[in-house]
Amino acid sequence: MEWSIRADRPVYLQLLEQLEAAVASGVYAPGERLPGVRELAAQAGVNPNTMQRALAELEARGLVRTQRTAGRTVTDDAQAIAAARRALAERHARDYLASARALGLDDNEAAALLAAVIQEG
Amino acid sequence: MEWSIRADRPVYLQLLEQLEAAVASGVYAPGERLPGVRELAAQAGVNPNTMQRALAELEARGLVRTQRTAGRTVTDDAQAIAAARRALAERHARDYLASARALGLDDNEAAALLAAVIQEG
DNA sequence: ATTATTGTGTTAGGCGCTTAATACAGTGAT
DNA sequence: ATCACTGTATTAAGCGCCTAACACAATAAT
Image (cartoon, rainbow over all chains, first blue to last red):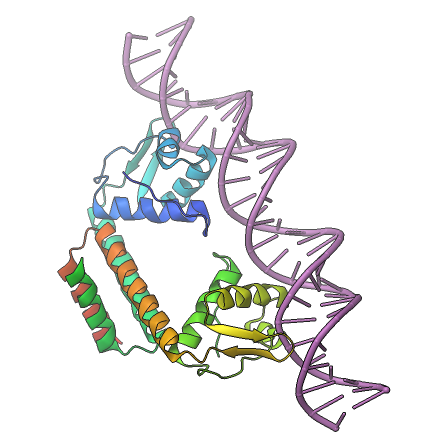
């Protein structure tokens, strides 16, 4: 998978979010084995400790399970993954709406702006 | 104005964003004087130094100007404010779209989800 | 003239994040 | 049995953010 790390936020949180999105969107299928900590860290260009921290958080959210010496696998619970995907998407939608309102846009304008952005690109 | 500070991101960036939104949305009108650094810091519950840093960044963006000992005022350039508002709103829309796509939603689903969230509340 | 308020600068200290460099125990494959 | 790989833990160092506690020059108000 592809990684994108910025300097304006804690790296481990960005890793966590991108891992969540990857699992939720099926980049790693239910039951599939994840690459190891060192491999993922190398991909993302971060320290293994930092990736480890993100993975531990991801596990706390129930999206992956760990077999001590046999690596991590995405949970088999497809329903849990679907629920997480819905929850994440909804949260992003709410965040966008809140941002638009903070700028003084009403809901129609927020929807219209999104439509315009979709049209363009 | 109201402030909302979380612990998972640099405070001065959150202050900057909320100040930007306040000016862009007209909470502080063009030409209007802003509260002082200490006053704003007290409102937001942060250290004056941190608020100072955010205000300096805000000034770098051209939204406010400083008269050394007479406080800060919002720029008179209503066009610049309107442009900033548009740019910020568009950026949030693009961010939402990117997040939705990362979760595997297509553009129609992203728009529909936003509509649904608007419906609810 | 004095006083209060303005933006600004400085120093110190604490805390969390990140990296680097190891180390260890358990497991699967050879 | 040996070896490579797994997740996990530890220690040290560096850096940025944030707070605290000041200080100073310039201006407006009294």
